[in-house]
Amino acid sequence: MTDRKALMADKKRVVVKIGSSSLQHGETGDLDYTKLDVLVRELCNLRNMGMDVVLVTSGAIAVGQKAVLPQRAKEEDNPIAVKQACAAVGQARLMMIYQKIFAEYNQVAAQILMTKNTIVDNLNRYNARNTFEELFKLGVIPIVNENDTIATYEIEIGDNDTLSAIVASLVEADALILLSDIDGLYTDDPRTNPDVKYIEVVEELTEELMNMGKGSTGSSVGTGGMTTKLQAAKIANSTGVDMVIANSKDIKVIHRILSGLNIGTLFLAHRDEKFDLPLYVQQMHACDK
Ligand code: GLU
Image 1 (cartoon, rainbow, N blue to C red):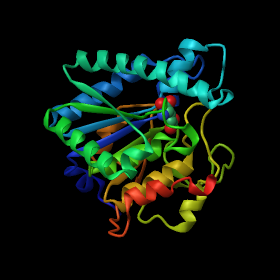
Image 2 (image 1 turned 90 degrees about the vertical axis):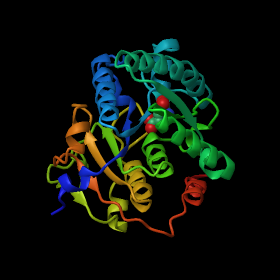
Image 3 (image 1 turned 60 degrees about the vertical axis):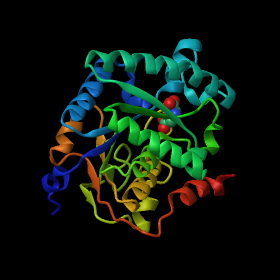
Image 4 (image 1 turned 120 degrees about the vertical axis):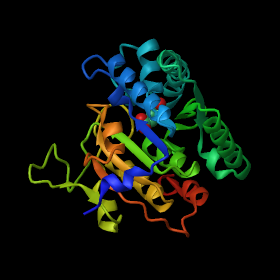
């Protein structure tokens, strides 16, 4: 059995990803300020413990849509251009709220918006990595999202599960925590199959596992299902990052996971020297086009 306490003991650089559905009240679609507050407090506390921390947050489109098109119930009802306009409004609003809460805890936060090109282009990637490093040195918490207003949504990185793994890989993080509306990885969809088994640890991402999450998605907001989480695990694990998927219903799982408690599904890092991040990102979705 994996000794999670020992594994987590020396984590110094952590990326945390939170999805749109975890930030909203299910019934109204409005932001859940209590959750946001707990999230920010958890992250500030990790920072106070001396860790380098990155937050990858979704919510730009959802928050923007609430502001300018409140009558539309679902993100996917909107054409791409409308989603991008919503993101332009929502990203600024989201950052305003984050800045306010981070400031309450005396913590400086920064915004980094990325596209596929940030990774594929050598100079952009180099600059992005340097910026992250400088921010860590300054004790700042970078808040990352995809630059949805200029990235053509579906054909760019497209989901923040993958984006967070790319970021974790870029900054050579020790751990990536994906907070989602599911407890972890199951052998099948637990909402439709009562006989599913919960998987505590994934020692190795086999072909069989990679195929397991195909076609699953949890909610009407955000873009991540199990497929994107497994893709994230592939990127993170291949570049030496341990990853945990856990349920965001209690945000305090963040420090519990990092203290080594057996929460969520742990995907163990297996550094693959042949894994080429820019090439992998370049080829992502290539078969969908
Ligand atoms: N970047 C999108 C947003 O902020 C969300 C993508 C995702 O949910 O994975 O709205």
